[in-house]
Image 1: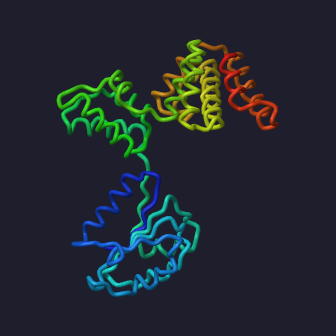
Image 2: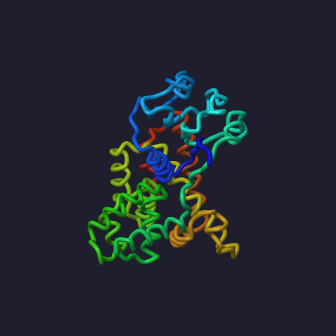
Image 3: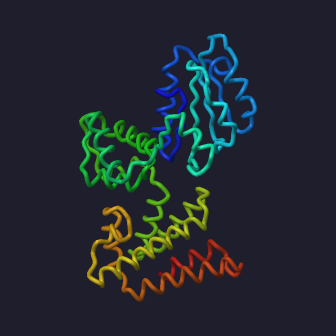
Length: 302
């Protein structure tokens, strides 16, 4: 088994759990004694740390983080077997010579987010361990509301278990009361209010997002994307193709909700809405329209 690890990827919960598991292989760890953290600020110390003898002898753990592999990776060749090196990155470029060198001597593990179906099953299984029930439909709803970040999902599940207690049942209504929504879910709420002609509610929700310091440009892009998806679903439906999820590469749950929304517009109406967003984009880029006022004007005209 290698004593060098390269851990990377977007799923931080699993990645950090792997780091903690490696730490537990040591009987005792103390920062600066036999546990060392290396980043770009102190990467020049790596050679002396790898070669130095500590109070515990040669046994040590060296964690190298966020360097984009921009260090002398040849230092990792022939290190003492009592030394473990864990390299942690958000992502890696497999084309670089540094990665290719490390890949020959290290155990390389990429930590990916679960896909939607895996996360739904994770929600069901974890709640079951606490003797709490949830339907597949409501677990799917929770995944769409809370996203794909496992640590966030676990935090929300812990809140649900406390709320319903052992033997309880988690429903959509409970999720709405207890769980914190992702920005994507909040934007979908704005879209839902727009479609149901609740423009005053949509404006209030937009103001709430801005108070939470959500970037207006990001909100615009996400709303624009959802209306484009509505338009594409409308076009697919009229062509006789109802396989929206596969064609748009979105979760079937989301596709079903968008399809119901698309039924409330004609194809021409959706095309005009997209033109309005494009016009907004151009005017804000030219400085002819305030971002916030422009987006609120679009909401009011829909």
